[in-house]
Picture 1: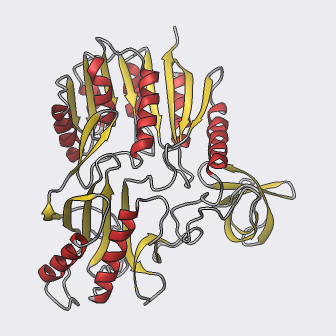
Picture 2: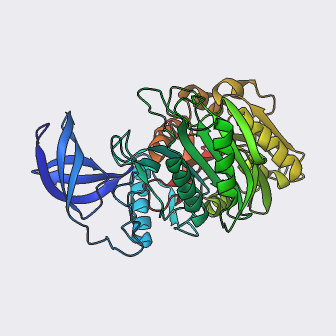
Picture 3: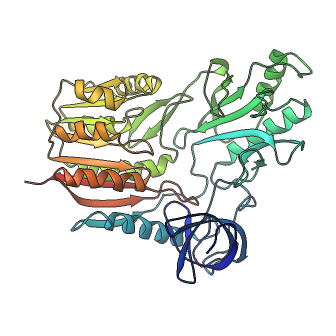
Length: 459
């Protein structure tokens, strides 16, 4: 295969994440977003050391696995879902094989316990960050997800299948309101405009909804005052017929040049700037930027699995590193001597402290800081360590310090299995053995999957 040339072939299988493998004359090409069994046309955009990467141009023929049943009308255009056209049971088989292949490449003599599916595979997400933009240059206002393969174009997703209907009602009402008012969206290259993002969070168990409109402070081009405009938007949302109920409606000012959802200033327009969700009998307070698993029911499966791997924590000191809002720490705390959580996001740490107090747990300590910088200063000596790092895994220097604690058991929870297997190589070189592992599908219709591993220190 030659760089820049077009080829057509059948996808043999998938590798994590979202990569289809196509063989052409004995050479292997990796084609992003291509599904097993599809006949695809792709262009080779990279070739290095015999490795080819292709950009998907066309699905010539759909896979025998694909079906029209329950397929989202935005599928294939929206960049959110990759494998929604494949029945859920087949999705699970694909993900299970991907995780097993990755683990088998670095682990020996361990028990792979397969994959556990999400209790629901539609309407499961409890958080969405929607972007304002247009579907094409100078087109009408759009609010939704980025078009697949595009940094600029935004697709309206009024019928998204992976969120509750309350999300789409809020989304549609917001877009229509600001379109009628002719409010300009923020153009990322020019750094001009007002509307940036819409953040919606909804608890599955309590039905509480938190909505945040993210805008710049640039009011040029508005046909009425910002105050009047935002008040009208709030009243529009309050007039919607929703299954859930609003915990809060917020406006967040963000003048960052980066295309990220963050707050320079948060204004509470209605209610409060947090809501509550329940997991495994515990209650959690969640604010706009708190880390919390995006699939609440799936999170219960994930944490039940992790709790089973942890085993008996009676009279033990547990370190929960990358603890977020303290979910794992509080699940383990009732029978532990003490749980120490470390999390870099200060807001999440404050929420964790409040959650622990509200749940009547007085043996949890939460520390704000980077695990790399904090872990070496901790005074307690752990009996067990739980790792739940971000997508990039554990920083190599932090991993060395964690290993130096010499605990008998670790439980590693990973949202990116390629980072997991990289860290497992180091852990095994430093005296740990992978005993058990399982995949948990927290993200149906997408290529993402969680993995839990139990490691034991070799005698």
